[in-house]
Image 1 (tube, rainbow, N blue to C red):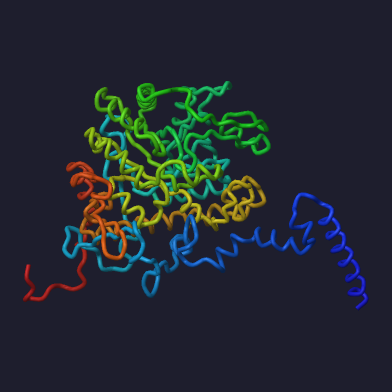
Image 2 (cartoon, one colour; image 1 turned 180 degrees about the vertical axis):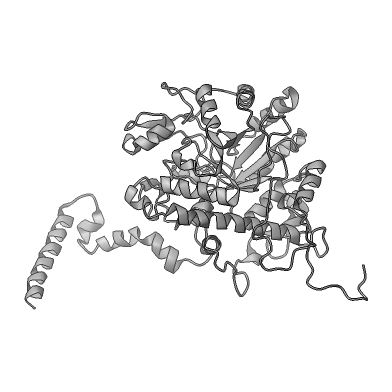
Length: 524
């Protein structure tokens, strides 16, 4: 009781002092009018995202990823039950734009009957990356699902390590992001090295691109392809600034910049200024390294794509792959206007670019890669039907290694140690454990893609045509995918030769499907 008698006056004095401060301050009218009490509003605002995430919002109301979507990723990563009971709670009948995948009663591929079928499926790309242009180090990617570009500096070293080890376990590629190739990228996973506007990791002491440093870099690391980043879906046409306080010795060494100084990423490349000079640079990089070379871009004005396709058709120079990043894609930090309203969403942007290449008879020579919430099976299937050969997963891979969608990536206070450079927070992420979860998620996504392809009667998701998808426009109508985006019937598929080869690679040695031998009276 003595302790309580002393505590009450102390608490009262503290509240009185806080009230006096609120009454005197001029920054917040609410606190001047309602001292102490008004602070409850700011507390609720602070924990609002958590309240909505765990208490208020329905299963399909949260963004960018709903509770159902996150639950599927988490359960897949942990190899827990990722099935859902009782039927869909999506409002299918009244949701315009909802995609429906059409299964076939009789198809060329017969789904295996075992519940565990497809868990360890090999799902290579239907095209050989770099083969069309005769690159010395052309190769067929082993996985149609790969890890998108996320830089060390944006993600913690432990997160990069987990993703790289996970890529090695799952047999897929990891894109380095534009922040350079760090020691954390050297844990067994094969890489796509991204060249951003600042040329981190391959620049000289003046910040200029250095071909010699690039060649040394790719010679000493498992780099399988080069990607020139023109723009990103969530923040196209923007440069970037990493404040000097965040430029640690590790980041400085990885990027080739001075430690402790502001790090500026320009909004444009210095090595080229138009499509013609871009293609010259592409051919230079390919010739000097032997690697396939591609570009990554969001989609806005289509003049660039028209010029690029025309030059590729008429001059023989060209990119080996095109990565289209949708406006719904993720970023560590960007102005709200850019994340919300600049650049087309994936399906619209990708379909317009694909059509341009198809009209120039180039679609079979280019490997198309998609990004922007394509780590979910339904979105990925539509992407493959539209002509994607590979899909990149970013935030979904982050969820697999522990991200809880706190949306604090820009504050350096990520509570799970994924998108932060805070060593205390990053230590909470165990790269060894999380790498297995990343691999589990990647394998599960490939399994689901394979199962849907077989339900559509084909052996590989890259063989799903636009006729297999319809887009609902309400309760009473729908439109085939090829009509929605103005595709010709033959578009969206690899060449006949590539189709035949991927079918050969996908046909298992054991018979497909079936649960019992047919009876003596069976027909056919």
